[in-house]
Length: 126
Image (cartoon, rainbow, N blue to C red; front, top):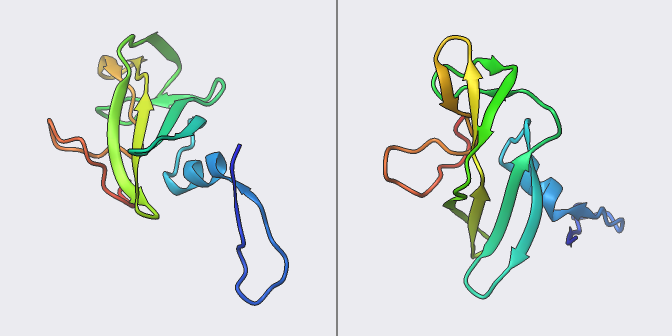
């Protein structure tokens, strides 16, 4: 686990923050968590997974779904905006949820608001 500090400019106190926690809060993940962060020569690779038994949202209507239908075998990968000049690569195995309105759909992933076939995320979009 990697820590980031210092937080205060005038303070002599240092607050260590796990990089996993920083990324989770920065990407506004509520039902997901950062499970692993790896620094390679090309990028910082961030693995993301479902957080415990938290309810996931339908990717179409965003309704909270009680049941996960299955986990997709193929891991999806997105390139996010750079962090301190180092490109971020997000990896996630999407879940298919049973939505009462839409049927079986891929879960909504909060930091992925992309047009089709585009693989770069946009910051601060809900």
